[in-house]
Length: 248
Image (cartoon, rainbow, N blue to C red; front, side, top):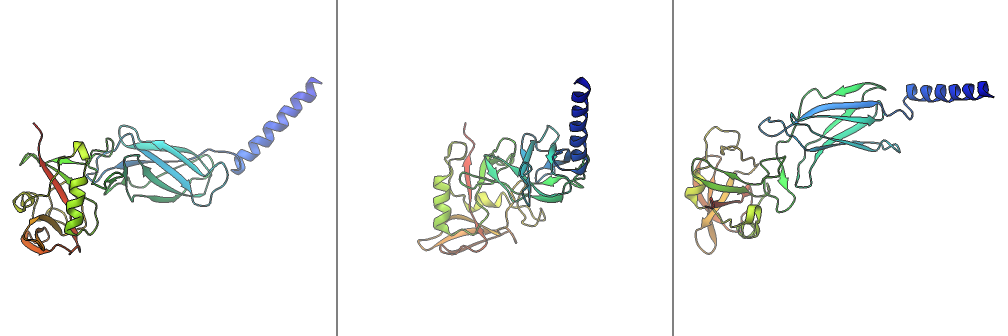
């Protein structure tokens, strides 16, 4: 009886081993990489999800959290299968993603370069996020002492700009539309494609300033470092920034 039981156990182990070697039922494929921000700084404490392109039950999605140096390792992937890796946060969104085929059974795929989040925007209000680990959505200009929030990276007319600034509750609120003089302090010729002081990132060329009259408003053209004005209903390439003096 004992010999029969041992034989049965051995048979079960043999079957399970064969299944693992064939990649069926064996969650041993993995992927590892590193997450960095727009300044190539490692990002800690952010979740990375791996979603299977053609879901197989039990292998649809796995995740891991980045360590202090931004590195991560996701285990349990179905071997040699297409996955999409994305950063995820409950505070912000981004468009960063990496598509790859998982490693063969028992192996680990290594991303050839770091996953880089070029832009991230707060889920509440859409302002640019400057610290991905904390979700901080404003920055202090050490040259002027002014604090800035950068609005959604989308075409914005003047009424929408005023409404966004008035409704912005980042770090307690109190934001207002900037003056032309204040916007000019953010201009840096030859810095990046937009000539804007780091860490600002946007695809816009103009930023709204104070009103000019009932139908127009001032705007600063960062592309050429020029002051100008336009109709309040214009929105193409125009963005909204909010500003305030540092609370004392």
